[in-house]
Length: 266
Image 1 (cartoon, one colour):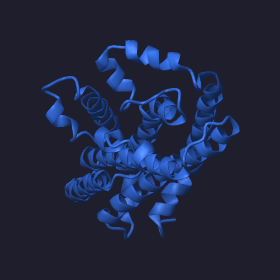
Image 2 (image 1 turned 135 degrees about the vertical axis):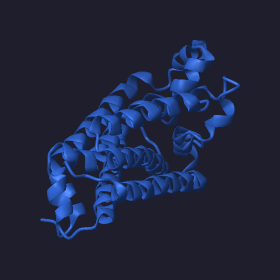
Image 3 (image 1 turned 30 degrees about the vertical axis):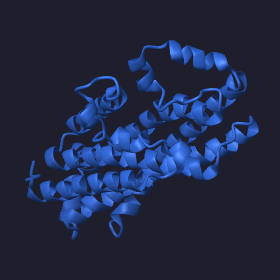
């Protein structure tokens, strides 16, 4: 059972992960179905222009043209809905990695086995990373396939880049949830704090260009690393990838250190 904690965790999450994936396929199909009624409609851009600038920045990344496939996906999918789904999964997995085991009274059994606490954290983290990457890949593939049915055509490499940045966004906040899970053993706290910080990071990134005192903080937001360089148009931004990976690595290092020091006795 514990020969590979990573594989065991993935197996235990298998049905839920498939359900999340199926939900993303349906979500991509829904947005693809709306595209024929929107494409080539300049009135959609007129509607965006009439919005207050702050509101437009929150929901319309860059200067997106909603009458084009790229602009439509940027605004309708990548700016809001896709991050919500991926963040919900990653934060839930991260919070449940340690705190979930404690809540179900299985942690004592787990750490009583000849498995180091560091390995427990890292293999649980590996399962969270793989699951998050899987969901991003499913979303990208569904977007390519279902989009082709309705002339919602985007370059596959640009979709892959956008999904990679989406996965990294989830991994950063999932790693934070896992670190809090390892430090506190409290699933509610481990979910609530990352979720709240994700909202703050979203607002900082969206309002940074129009609120002077937020502008210096914008580039530190994980959401800026996610969409600030417009991966759907420009492809992978390697500095942003490096920052996201570095942030996740630091958080996972803290998770290992905190779990090793914490007394988990009931």
